[in-house]
Image 1: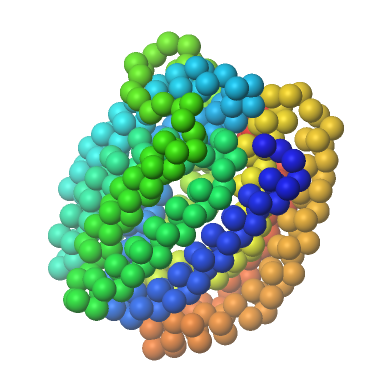
Image 2 (image 1 turned 135 degrees about the vertical axis):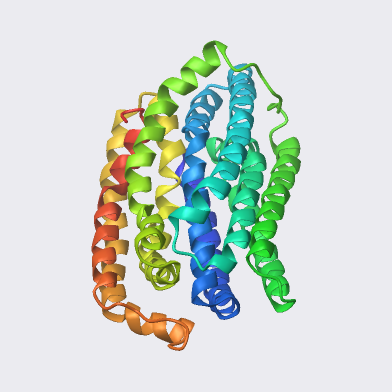
Length: 373
């Protein structure tokens, strides 16, 4: 699945999903901030940061499965694909158990002492942290379903399911907040969204990919060796690259106050329009590059690198200029000056950082697909 029509279809579906996510986030965020307040929303962002780092416990197996499903699927080697899926599912189930145990440890050993959170909000934050572990217990093994569709380059299914689940989750969040529930309701809805997405993916897989079987396999053997050899370095790269970019969301509530997470995270969200505009495009490069690599088609890989980088920069640079010029005014009008105070020097620095990342995104995506981590 690598001709121009199919690639255009995948990119179009990704942009449709990105547009839907943008609309949902734009409409939902002022409601959440208004109901939770700066402290409450800051706690919600802190929970998201904890969740972000716990996700590294998948040790890169999700991305590795995407790569090898793309390569083996290109060769129609379904026996290998099913073996890889079984092994990865077992590993990720174990990772989910580890995430739950670690979330309990964080909730009772770290949360009460490490973060500047009002004492009366500690029990709420502690229970929400445990629920994050419950979410990952399901999310890790269920992510195999999404990885299969990504490896088969069925971004129409990925985007369709994501859009449906995000809209339903947003409606549930609004209903929960209006009914007087807080952060615990938001985390519970996240768990429900994870399970709903897994159910929809399983139904689509049964219909669209009858040659693929979902099962548990033993944690060992040639499939584990093949995946882990790639996933270990991929995971380390993600920790260094993505983990470093998120560390501020842990440091701010540690050193300063959890309430300051609200303006910082919203500034990042406004600046992230740069990524929102390009990742629907670059996400298709990973399985596509893996398929080209399986055919040893270096000419197409070079073409993808050059054209992809040019298109990404043509999209991201004008957006970076616009966000720098108008981002602060937009943020105050969007959330409301009564809910947020924006530090003036932060936004240009974040935009500059995001622009550099955008420039190298095509190259790093292709290198990851080629296992040149």
